[in-house]
Image (cartoon, rainbow, N blue to C red; front, side, top):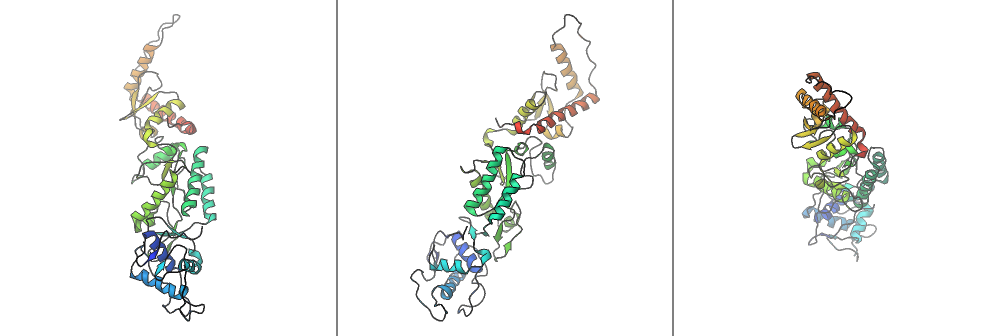
Length: 385
């Protein structure tokens, strides 16, 4: 892309939209005054903030004196019918002169509408690197197409090469469990309860975004989560997240956002219609040999006996071999299964089994974890409804 075109005039009495002012200011910071300039030495501005004021006014006037209303040898003032004194207008002679003089490394700067943070467009090579990285990660085939579409669309609309964050593709149940244990907390979802566990969700971030600090210094080491920009201005960082979400949920991409607080997150379905815990219970039942349900206090399971469902704890407890199943639960389930078994005319009913022991409860906790392992291995067959 070339330099982003300003949307309106910047100057005395002009529209002076914040994004237009910020871009004009940034350009003037990256232009060095010519030899024999009558307006001083160095750049025309030393900082930018998106607000038109005396320093910006003076910088525009000085630039026009040096490059727009000056003869070729800059020894005399000459008229320019395609320029307005004191103003920069979209596509006029002042704008063209600014583009001709701006430092090459800053010839394709951009700014989001309504924002004031100017950034440098990502190159085609940088975009391709993000695509290659996404292609190497684990997603379902359908969702991978949407991830690539989001990356390409962000570059097409805004000149930004976004990419998949660390652990932003499919996570194993174990990886999800480890994230749940982190302090401070980074997730409330246990193993099997995150949309990331099924290859149909992603976290996309801004690692490598080259943006200009107020003094014109370029941040070359931005993180996926925009930690540097957030520290400088949380409201400006939020504009980038909003732009990402707008692109991600557009018709061109077709993804859905997750919780508002989870800014990098996009997924393949609408959260409003999906309970991840209920869907895990369905997935467990489809993947293994036990019946499951989910209630407000955790999961319930028939323990493999085909009868009543017993409370077995949270997903994290089950995964960590700490399910809340008791020996009494097992004893009760065994008795119910024996009572429900049809009598055999050729053999007497077997004697009742002795009560379950603590060792039986430990074995059952492992059996419940085994059901989770089966579900983890069967992740591609999870459905949102």
